[in-house]
Length: 217
Image 1 (tube, rainbow, N blue to C red):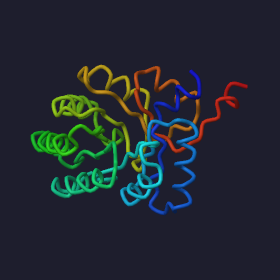
Image 2 (cartoon, helix red, strand yellow):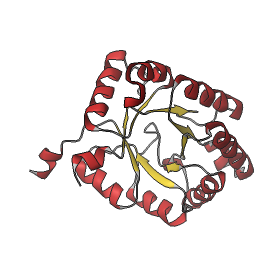
Image 3 (cartoon, rainbow, N blue to C red):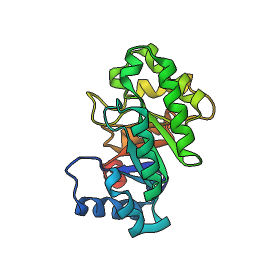
Image 4 (spheres, rainbow, N blue to C red):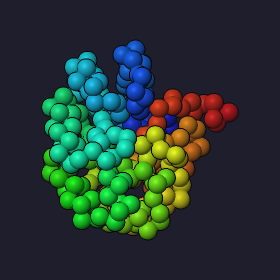
């Protein structure tokens, strides 16, 4: 896999709460130079980046992040504002509390509302696999598919663990044909990046700058 092919699948990400404008400028410059799929940034930076880069750089942002337990109305308001500010893609955290309580009708209802709110824009559902049982992961594959989301995403990067190869394999076996997979959290080497893609990930969330020459030497 070439560097260009790899970066076309990367959401170049910086979501630390203490990130500065200089940090964001560096992230965007790296993403633009390498042809990243998007930059994934905090909501407060969406408009600034859109104003600076226009259509030259897709902007992704997060909703209900990182805990997921915001009420649905709050998440919908976040989506509305993010799209108004120029976001192209929304990564929304599922209500993990509802999942753990087995309130799957509530989970599905929220996901359907998020799908309606994002419209033609890309919706990725973060399920935070580190907190889920195998059965809950499979159920969320079914719910994300039924809701019509574009992606199921492994992790926020703020949980107790990040992306795991086994979770991607499980997702691949249980999502519907219209749902793609995004792995995120702890992916820092070319070797890991290429393996996640080989397992079926269409997107990778990563803040690292991958040096393909160094890995291949």
